[in-house]
Length: 324
Ligand SMILES: *[C@@H]1O[C@H](CO)[C@@H](O)[C@H](O)[C@H]1NC(C)=O
Ligand SMILES: *[C@@H]1O[C@H](CO)[C@@H](O)[C@H](O)[C@H]1NC(C)=O
Image (cartoon, rainbow, N blue to C red; front, top):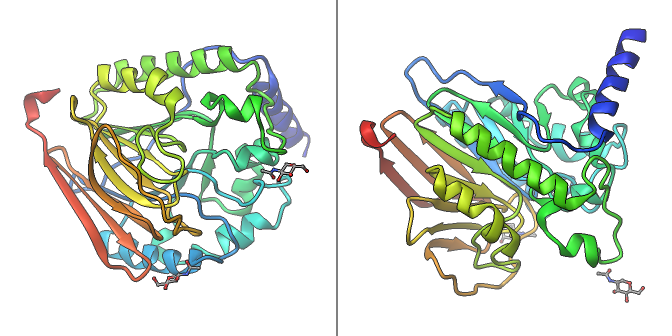
């Protein structure tokens, strides 16, 4: 008991202390014996099963089984409408544990925070207490998951978006451990750049909640285009994966190998909006679903799936060994 209180205190101090640049927390996740790695990605989901969240979950279970997935990536907006109220908020079970029940989904869920998560007790989602409720839950602000053939760089994008600070739409954002914004962002970018420089993985995949490129309701995130994108291009990042827009989309960069992937169809969708984009739109679907990804050292293969399990779009890339 005393030990766990002490641990909690250490973690609280770590989280609320003034932000400083530091090495990103790093988790190792072994790939399969055959050298491959398979995963699903879903975002914008936590609605106690409503808005087809349960249907998406069912299909994720089926796809997860077929692919024998290693883990799941959540691109944020984990709990609507305002994140969790605390570590004892039943929404955690009602929207997560009791929804993604398939055997194949009993794997680590590497999770970032979305803007809606920041409207509640953001620190609750980061708390190890939740891991005792459901051991799959691995949520941090910015961190690296290293699977040898692929490194996944999770980036906390909500603090980048200026309007959440200046015009918070009547909501309170939980900026504990974040404010002041400028220092936080500079540290995230530096930590990310340091981690990218060290990466020897064949595939470099960056995950954030907000899109860099999107043709749906929210569109491109200007702050990320300006601040994050140059770093991704400079370090040969292959995929940028996000949620925030409640759709499935694939946009390819016109001047780099980077692919922009939105998997934000975990529940409420059908915004009825499609705009133009300066980069090349390969695929856009306004409804619910999720993304799957299979990686080997030689190739990457991704697919978008809808609520009925139909594969709507696939894309594959072979990588010559000498490219990195
Ligand atoms: C759920 O999915 C079905 C099948 O695609 C669709 O007809 C229905 O409109 C969806 N419901 C919601 C609330 O989005
Ligand atoms: C914010 O509050 C005002 C006044 O109560 C209300 O008219 C407006 O709809 C609210 N905006 C949002 C986004 O909830």
